[in-house]
Image (cartoon, rainbow, N blue to C red; front, side, top):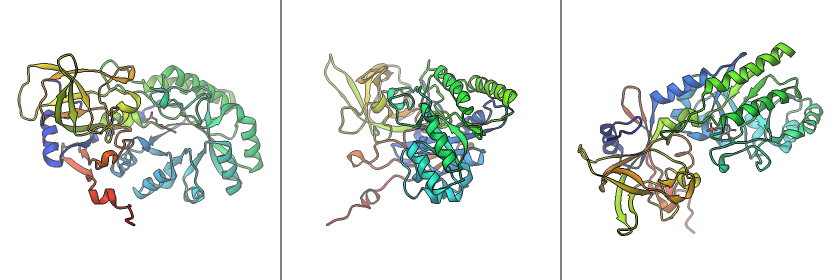
Length: 419
Ligand SMILES: Cc1ncc(COP(=O)(O)O)c(C=O)c1O
């Protein structure tokens, strides 16, 4: 029988025994390996790798990446607060946010850098910090994502300053005597490497409009292969192309631009799994479907319901048995929501598909792999009042450490005010 990506059947059973299900488990060795691989991104004049912490924000993961030498990308001041509380130095944090609250100056004063993501944000920064250093997030005019919902470039996207507004940006920068030190673009999650390369060329052109810029941040979006047959972005190839462009710019102008990338998915997606238990088996008659109902769902992993994204599912029999017989199953989550599906049809997010698995019984385990990014972070926590699931880190010596407890009912109700 097939085995889960980084968990053996025995380890999966041990996890349930120790912590119950559903639970998230992360693999330290994979996290470290991915960090090392990102740090090898080719660059001619220096590289900073920022972890886009929105992908998975547990403090243990933040500290682990901090110790690997990564810096951080935060998407809100709340994420900045989490990083600071985890002990990450403010100077390692860059903020690119859709919502810049009035409290933003206190973060800048501590050393956090801002990528102004709209003209208004740039004006606000200039008013508060005349003569200050600021990054500029541009929408380069092209975007690409694994689904339209993760495409954050082009005319239909509100992320960043539209690339044709360089004149207005230059005027604001001059008016407030700002140093625009960084250009930043992020075009989407799971972006097409060809579009990414095209945007790299656009960014090289953009650098010419801003002679004081010394840092180019190319964002994240690098694809990883969750399912068999999927291809991962080759970081070395992507890096060679942008490095050649930066070298050419240096030869021509003498500007030695420092490169930044800020992957989320690439660093954590295949380092995480959801471990769940099959809690019901049902069917819709002889010409219908057979369903496996898990004790997790969109409350732990929303991506299949939201994007129709595909995750490898591995059945782990409750006992140490060898199941010869195979069946087709539609796998669903535990929420009272028809969209709570774990086997959406590939390419047709609104339809369900069947998956061939060993014959399943109530009490068997199901491991959902490729669940390290945007799962714990983005799930519909507390829908149907399900408590947030615990998180566990598998250390390099195989030991499991609990890094987040299961939420209690008291915690779930803590902010309600009985009147
Ligand atoms: C500004 C920014 N940088 C980096 C990322 C990370 O993207 P990914 O997880 O696809 O690498 C995101 C994701 O949405 C983002 O918004």
